Image (cartoon, rainbow over all chains, first blue to last red; front, side):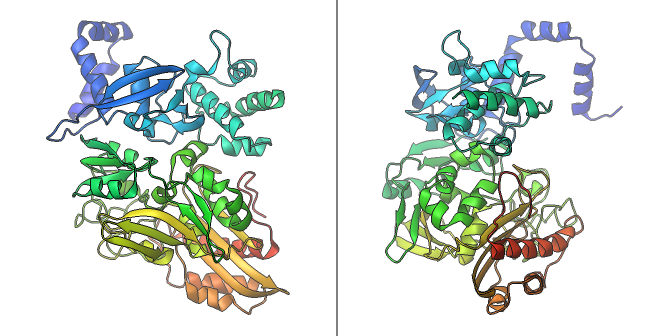
Length: 204
Length: 337
């Protein structure tokens, strides 16, 4: 056993049951709030607080008028402020693609976009890809082809594939694999992901 | 991330006025800057958003060159008809880098200014002369598989991570720069610096200057070129070694040659002596090996990265062979022919 405080606290969490952990969060809403604000704004406060900046942005067809700490990334705006939790945070440094959304029709990593820079932009997330209850053809193809295992990367894969198809340059399986290389799937569902995308490309 | 003030500029003079001050920075694509701000390596107190500046043109110049606006996105540049037709080595290099998402975000000027991916530069718990001058270099005796073998110093062995810049160096591009006191042009070869004892300075861009455009010269080596990139996985990884090569071959004899290496130095690496040595020689393996030897004569490994010297030698020969045959490296199927 280590005497480093960080490792001890990890141990104590590891020995806590899920029920106890859930209870602790319910009983301590302040702690949970603090954790969220740290996650969205990160560490090391400077002397002066950031002044909130006004931003008007359209997300899945709905216009939002917001006042944001300029440090807020697009993914944190989506997940923490607007409850659009379909977009997933993987690495938070542009290396995994789980956070991919469409910005003005183009696929981007929402973890590297400052939300204040989205003034006037049109954002489409996985929640806005289909039409109402009707799935987007890529969503249906991913189900039909079993193109996922844990599903965590799937919203990013699907948004990225939608962007890639509208770019209109990838044709062969090799080209699809290369064009989709910004989306990592740690379950290794790549063959079925490529097949699902090919299904949709064949339809269109 | 520390707190910062956010300002939006609508033209170059306004951007230059807004950025005046010690710790203000421009932001365009943000793919590198936001990443570095999250880990407290970059700590600007003000960001000037330049994405609305009118710098997104790709225009023909009198004399045959092309002027690329600093805000042209990497994906738009790689897919621009003028670039694909006249500068396919540039299109190929851009497509060899990053991912579809990042290329949609990253700007031409930002790509030129991106910072090293040396892991110690990112890790604020370790010494790094580039991040905090005078603290030492953790890479020299550390995990340095991705670090440099040419032009390194006792202070820093970081590499410049860009693929696009390797092609720009090969082409002899010119960086156009503006400041409140006027405009100037910096040849690509002089834009990035070697680490020396000031590795904290990546480039010769001065404080208060902005990149407005990158000029591509008239000669694009479109018939005989390649961009060959070797990395630890097939896609979406930084180069261990990359080579941009351009040749003009007549009757099996090399009339003109351009070579630039990526992944091996603090800047895209060119050695004019090696290019001169290729001129007038038959386009064959012996000639190409000779050029590789000349380019790597002063190469120095640091342990984990010593393999790069042999790898670079083979990459140079292979790239020159690909260029001479007119069979450039595919960036989709990755088969090296």
